[in-house]
Image (cartoon, rainbow, N blue to C red; front, side, top):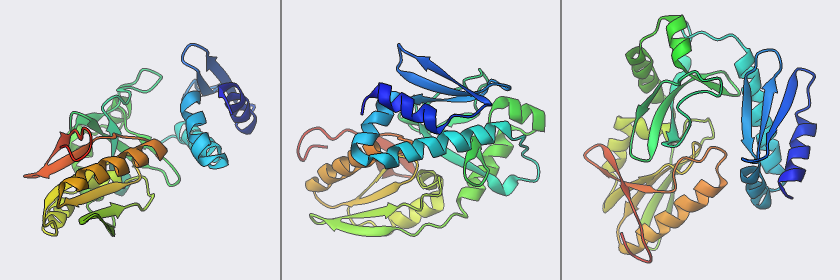
Length: 263
């Protein structure tokens, strides 16, 4: 599989009379765009090919699903009033676009040096990131969206799976509801986990569908966490960061793990 074959495969599966395909040869990206509205989604072909080598057809299926549902969400008229319970925060990398491809700025907050907090309206099978245009049209303030989203994330389930490796304990939250990484913003949850930690508390949010909490009890634990985080980061549909974080006094501080047993 190469970019040319992947492009052809995606165009065949996403073909629709209301859509057009725009290929950027320099960036090796394929944009799928609604002809009438001009809204669309851009797919990195090399990134999709890399996932195909690890996941085969599942990688293509997920990309087609993501694009199809995303385009449908863009075409649907949405509002915030009356939908308060469907507003959630989503974690993205610091390099994630600050505006939609149509040039409309997203509403987001700084989080760590590696991450940002965007805000989304859940639409069932997908969600729409809230932008400044939507805020203006609905008459909502940024603080209103922020407070609503953080309240809602506290209502999400938080059942962790536990694994022990080399004397260290790792907790995984992976419900695949689109907001697993967002749960790191639930201060009550994080403080409750802190009470369970015997060693040093660390966390990782490699992609949007997983939150890892680590109880690091020896130097090997840092190596294991780094390897886990990189593995999840490489396989995630929406990667966030391959770095891990120390959790201290309610704050996340990035840690760089260089070489074996080095923090």
